[in-house]
Amino acid sequence: MRYSGLQVLWEGLRGNRGWGPAWTKPEPKPAYDIVIIGGGGHGLSTAYYLAKNHGLKNIAVLEKGYLGGGNIGRNTTIVRANYFLPGNSEFYSHSLKLWEGLEAELNYNVMHSQRGLINLFHSDGQRDAFARRGNAMINQGDDAILLDREGVRAHLPYLDFENHRFPVYGGLLHPRGGTARHDAVAWGYARAASRLGVDLIENCEVTGITVNGGKLQGLTTTRGEIGAKKVAIVVAGRSGQVAAMAGLTLPIESHVLQAFVTEGLKPCIDHVVSFGMGHFYISQSDKGGLVFGGDIDFHASYAARGNLPMMEHVMEAGMALMPMIGRARVLRSWGGIMDMSPDGSPVIDRTPVDGLYINCGWNYGGFKAVPASGWCLAHLMATDESHEVARRFRLDRFATGHLLDEEGTGSQHNLH
Image (cartoon, rainbow, N blue to C red; front, top):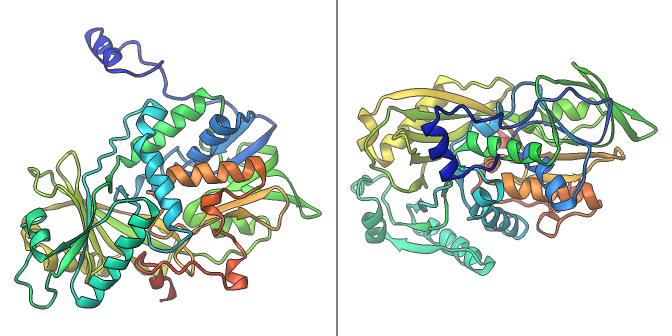
């Protein structure tokens, strides 16, 4: 069924009796041409673009829990293309362009809202750095506007402009930045992939990867043995664990990143706002809750929950920036397991095992990368050539020294 406003109206009038399942739930086949391990945003988008862009069939996505139950549903929903370094800049620019046509592409409302993103700066040095970043963004073909103090005040009058410890000097406005509904992104890609014949296998945990003579043979799962010609590991914070099944050691640490949401409030924050003197970022959801986050927990962990010291750290930064939120009651918090690479940039590449591919190391940038990540990994798996916007995301760069040290993504905290 193709979704439309007319269909919604018709089903509403007839008691919503005509809606079918958004995607099918088949039993796993004995073998597939391509298997994607991980049913999150990156895995689902990869499967979709393999079928859509390259016409490939006999594809499966294996998810140990339910689709969209990992980091795709555990983030702060921010979509942006304000990266600085060559390699990252063109990749996230490509991703934002895909975001802008995603709802029409998938025939699904992912609630993409380009409300604008403002990165605040609080010193002369930060102003210079954001001026350089803005120029790089414009040269890449994206949008950036450097605001002075009064320019920020016109957009964000509720900030603490009298804070002498962290004075607001100005901000970099990225008008095309914004947010999207994280769950809907997973559901939209799942539905679209299923319609193209991709098998979405839930409750199917991979417990082993069979390699013979350096060549991939297949997978051992909780639902039986599955043969595969090509396999991609797309499991975010579990990348190191799954890669170890094939005898690989990845340059990845797994840390927890917490996020928070308050009770529903009347509209008061109509941008995404990032604090420059404390790792804090905030937006307001369509339901009225203030959605915000900050630093990763500085100890490595596979637990999808956070700790109280980091919660306090995030709240302190928020109160320093905008004391008005102090009376808002926090409803809940959650944690996502972040796959942190040493240079803050991702990996989309082949591995030393023939037929095995890896997509990992997204740090703080995973959600906004979902469309381009799937697009580029699908291109790599279909053609065995890296897509032009992802050619620098090589796995061997940590050995050769060709790093993409994207200052400003927060990856430096990986060194703690």
